[in-house]
Length: 178
Image (cartoon, rainbow, N blue to C red; front, side):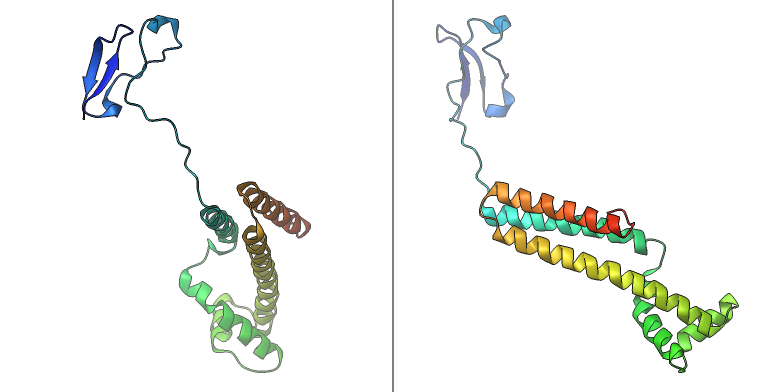
């Protein structure tokens, strides 16, 4: 199909095989007086994005923000060390109760501190981390419920914005920047 730009007298100004290969002319501009509109352009039809897609995008935006937020707690550690945190936490409770620990014993030995002191530190850090993770899980869950309940695009955006604002306020009270 050939696309044509026509002058007011219907003479051809230019032709092309694809509509995006031609000149874009602003016919409202006085420099282009006398030029006519392209004859082959279909009317603009706005893209309608289904509500479910907008909800999915809003959920993904929330998860991406949460992932960026939680990186501040994990960036300094290897994946293997992070994977050992539940074991360290369980063994810290065991040591506190008079039991023994393989991992904490070795960590304490290398660091030059007592196993009991390390267990107390691990338990305190674990409790803080679990508080943050529990809070973020609740924020995400609440956000998803609000996003799913939205019935319009504006409601979806409002639910996402409100959820982000809630997260900022909740973590500000904990003296952590979200």
